[in-house]
Length: 364
Length: 259
Image (cartoon, rainbow over all chains, first blue to last red; front, side, top):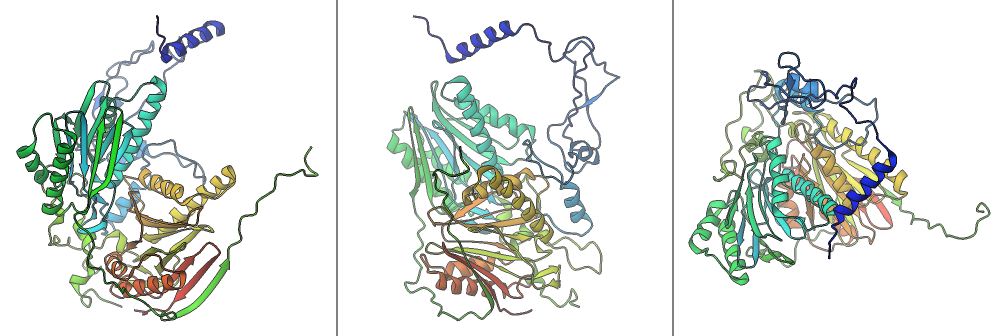
């Protein structure tokens, strides 16, 4: 019995096609062709001094150290003129073409001018000052998170979702800037899906981990997403933490966010190896509740996600320890016409016209 | 001409703008308590010139207030009408709520120029979508589009906080807001944004009731908007309220304090 993996089938097909087509010219390395120029930029604390790296070209020409210093940058700092000059894309006339992905730094110069000349302060972003936890139990992984999203001292969202889907067997909790955690987890989730299509296998937690850490390291901490990644794959249950600069830890229990100390105190006193599912959920709920009640940046409800081999349960609002009980039964009632109106315009909406699929004189 | 001495210093710094100076590295993910959640705001930076008013946040440059509320098979979106340059009022009929299609509207608070530019880009993208797909965009899809457009400019953002309100296929209302880099926040009752956001949170929280009919929803959102902008120097000068039901769209200009 010889098993043929899906990838082998496609390799065999590719080899057959290449033999049939005959030798094609290589993209580069042929005499006379030059490799495409590469220019990247290095992140620097002092953005004006650019480190020079020497990369040996894989084509026939070798770049000597003195001749072509290449500038390699992973996280452009928006404050350097040289960075902006190289990174800003040329204006494609007046058309706003769909972009090819990645960040667009076109407004950096204008924003800096606003900050310097007009003396205006750049605003803050929505953060998830939060408590997120994960622990490994007997059969898998339990993840937990609170549900408060803050904008400064104001609660912007009382019931947001901080446990993000990565793969059917992998979930990720996110703390830090809300837009960054959402964008990074969505992006890696798409990449994992494409990888699953390409390999035909269930995603592994370490794959997600490597994709996340390499993206975050590339942006040198400016994409501020602190994540707790957990899942169960063919090698067993895994739990990792990812820090905004790209470092990771592999742990049996982990907490992140502003409420992490409160939650960690619960874990350190009550965690033991080989917990059952009920014990694991209870411990996670207790740790998140400790964060909710003791940390000002976390609050509202507890979300729990239990991942075992072959089955994932997302218990949204598993606990609601902060119900809203102060509503008055009558509420406000305004009489009609209480508001003074200066002018009104009413537009009737036409229902969409359905074109019947029938014989028409125009059709053949 | 309002000079810098006459307005109360304590009232001119809404807490959310002062507490958040642009420090991305100091975040909640690090294992220490989040320092920006301290109750006292840090002292404001000294002004760049002696004659100009104290440094304000970019969001307070023009002043704005936008709110959207959900009713029974309908939604309401409202904004104020003032356009100012810091403390001076320049226009009292500035449009902040824009139509994308018959059942989808977006309100953009924050810097006026970015609001208009962002609206033009969004309308362009929606028209392309209409040509390709031969139908209107769903509100959830549109929210994802706005979020992606804003996150693309993560390190040099548009200074806008959009409020998106629409009716889905089954005439269920959908509302959502985002911060200026695209972090979506879906809500089932109301969403607010702008310089009057804190007052709007309080007013909407107390005045909102679930499943309101369009007439009652109109009264509620108008009263919430008026009472909130009356407590904010930078927004006001009347209000513009839009109620959308499956059969009609009602736009009203409401009267408010002109100060």
